[in-house]
Image (tube, rainbow, N blue to C red; front, side, top):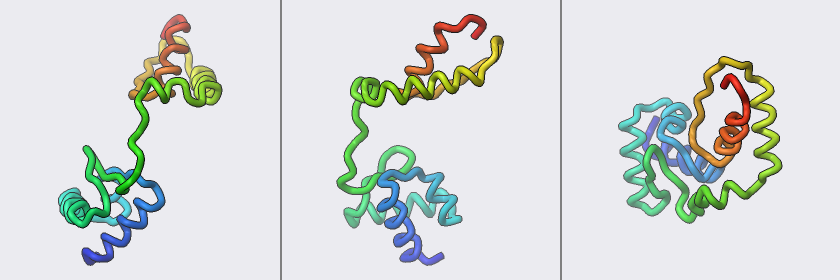
Length: 116
């Protein structure tokens, strides 16, 4: 795939998602990590995106709000997700969680269960 074709595809993906991981770009373009990194460097130099750890964000994309703000947003939905996840668990299982506002609410719910 030619560089200009890759640039067009990266621009299109950023227009759709506004935040992309290097892994996502590698998969979508079927290119190496180094090719993605070089392309992101050049597109950043052109002012078309901003590189961040592990990927890129569209120029002008708003940064993610702090965790304290995200914790209070959409509480009802996050608690529903936690209830649905807990319904899938059985005593004695091990659960690994990543970080985030929804997983923090899930962790609170998990702490009330015995055998977890």
